[in-house]
Length: 241
Length: 293
Ligand SMILES: Nc1ncnc2c1ncn2[C@@H]1O[C@H](COP(=O)(O)OP(=O)(O)OP(=O)(O)O)[C@@H](O)[C@H]1O
Ligand SMILES: [Mg+2]
Image (cartoon, rainbow over all chains, first blue to last red; front, top):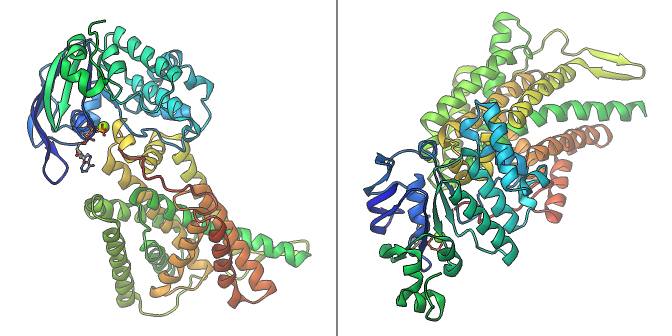
């Protein structure tokens, strides 16, 4: 279980997150939604250790993670596909994916096995292996980014707006990948602007606004909530799935 | 014809030495995001160390690169760990100021200890040449070139084929992306900085034989290698190699066919012409503003 407890964080000036508490039970998909600037990416940054919280704690299965370096947090099995460009544009696709296994670099056999597994999940990684990642389209880069983070066989996968800029076909491919990650037993924490898609994939939902948690619950409950319907879906929904 | 071939050959030899110096500067640019304006001073410092040891012991100056390269590596390592790393979140102008201060400090120390005069290491082969039919190749640039080539080969092998090299490239291309795969910022940047100063160690030993130098020579050298990497595209290693060869050729062709005074002018003429057409340099990519999260 990934837990945030009373996390306060910011970037220099004032606080961006005000006492954020949330939890992602094992093997669930939690979708974090909220307007621009609500602090969704900041939550992921705090969990990954890119930003240290001023107060509060991040725990994975009871182990304190806040204060650790990004590298040590990866070692605990938490990976992130960030919102904006995460790849190394001048490296090949193969090398980018290999870098996902940087922490395993001493174990060549394991790296090979993981890479084969990733190629199986994301065939693009094999098809475009020797091309610079910077040459790929936005959707293709997304697939490679997701493939790369799977090199560590993570316990928790965080994705920041994976649907951003994807056409319906790529979106379906990404959604299928998220499903597979979920079914393999990993915990997924998803940030989505496309609320219909996000909550459709999720088991649980969390709504943030102004750096605070507004609403938490089962994905279906969140989708059916009257406020959400008006705020994000444009119209009342029929609810449920 | 023979003269032309000989001029080209000499240009390529010198270009190879420039390539080594420029690769170090471009590597440091990759991690600091600023030009290390002290790189010329590191070069001249290493040239002085070479000259001293050569005079005291008679050991071949180019072979002394085996001493200056690790020495400058260690110096760069310690400097970045103690000082450089603290400036990672400061505005780039602070780093430039700091490195300029370091350059002035080195220049001042050399002035006090070595005196403000031209020096040059002159081993036995200093004015000898190999003759290949109608072409004669001076030995010193040839040895310097071979030494530079050997170090460059190691440099590129490390960057291309080791995890350390991958980490350095990853960090230079996308720091937050690198952090998210577990590359630690400070050790990686320190290593890249130290490799960059190590190349100045090697380059300085070669320089001590090829060109007379004095403490303030670093201004001229930083201008030269900065010109090379601007021409090639900031941060691009293939660009540094190409720019270095162009500079070597331009200098040697101009000094033979026009006059030595014109050689550096021609090089800057080439730079300006290239930058008008390709502001990002020959191999540069326009800096993306949207890479870091
Ligand atoms: N690097 C930064 N430096 C300073 N302030 C930042 C930084 N990144 C984000 N912020 C501020 O933190 C707040 C929350 O940003 P965050 O990126 O977490 O929002 P978000 O919910 O992910 O929004 P979006 O949907 O637009 O991605 C915003 O007010 C933003 O201005
Ligand atoms: Mg965001």
